Amino acid sequence: MTAIKWGVLGASKFAREHMAPAIHAAKGAEFYALATSSPDKAAGFQEFCPGLKLHATYEALLADPQIDAVYIPLPNHLHVEWTLKALAAGKHVLTEKPIAMQASEIDQIIAARDAAGKLAAEAYMIVFHPQWRRAKALVEQGAIGRVLHVDAAFCYDNRADTDNIRNRPETGGGGVRDIGVYTYGSVRFVTGAEPVELQAKLKLENGVDTWAHVTAEMAGPGGQFSYSALTSMRLFLRQEVVFQGEKGMIRVANAPFNAGVHDQAQVELHQPGQSVTIERFPGVNHYVLQVEAFSHSARTGEAYACPLEFVRGTQVMIDQIFAAARA
Image 1 (tube, one colour):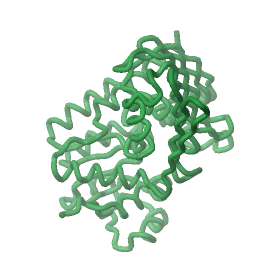
Image 2: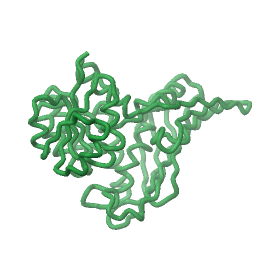
Image 3: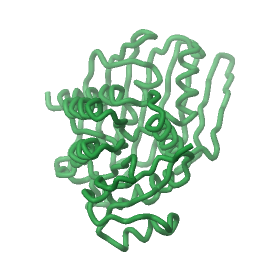
């Protein structure tokens, strides 16, 4: 099996701590090159990948004929620009979420993807984790009967980190774009449902949303259900999604979005008679699974499990949330 050679645009903290090590560890992938003008930042990557090739500019990395795929961890407002440049350079491209600031921009990327004949995707890693695939299977099997309500929460507190790109409007910051993609996208993934009616309230600081409460009526293959989601960058750490059915409940708990970082991933199935079945998933790295799935699809042309068309649906929902909050 020929490994896909990866290049990373920019030496971000997240890339150094999570995605670059995942590329280095993934089967069928090789962490080949990094684009950064900072030797100090490059040193952190060379610690676990001593033979890493360095490029001083993003353009130089994209021009490297040895590179098959590019990972883009740049600030949100640069995602579309460099995704399109990577596709134009003939590279497969995996871009951090959110891949775009609005749904119409994803249409541009889909068109560029199709024209280039390359794989382009958002780095939405949770759908590759077995905890989410298990939750989806349980819902589809009818383990809790018809889903009647879902509530989701993702909160953390970064108020002290004023220079963080998430706290800056010029870099596309805010909690909805940073963590709303999880509370909205995960429910869409499990249920196949989309909002048919939506309300939203936001609290802003310095032009970015630091608190968002979204309520909606969702409709999908299993019927219609109510939905509530809370995201905040100013509350105590919390991650949880609960699927409430007429015959039971599924709780994706502990660390549904940062599995293995803050806690161990697990899925709870609550059924009549106070029956609770807990499935745990120790040692699973969803970043590695994502890279392996992407590399396989890039190499073989087989369908990728999280295509841009799915991602566009979540962005449509985000666009609706901002519109509803303004109204």
